[in-house]
Length: 128
Image (tube, rainbow, N blue to C red; front, side, top):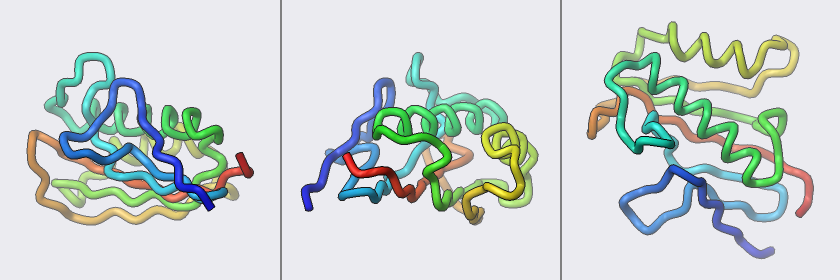
């Protein structure tokens, strides 16, 4: 199988890595941050960063040729592990059907660069 790097408009890493990698139907993201895709600035609030993280998730799935319905699992790292209000708000907006939600894990983290949340995902897409 051939591996394909997936890049996102308005998003990138300082290191030479793609936003995600696809092999066959399997898509694995790197870390998706709350950086604003237009200004490239890191907002100062968890609310704004969660909005941006979920925008990156949607953009990644569109760019990879799938949809958020193809996501099997999302993992979140939070500076304030117990504050999940913003995360849950965006989660419910993206996955309103309780019978069709991906698995989710949230963990405490010490993040840098003003980041308050990081996310990665695993998805299973149709064959390209």
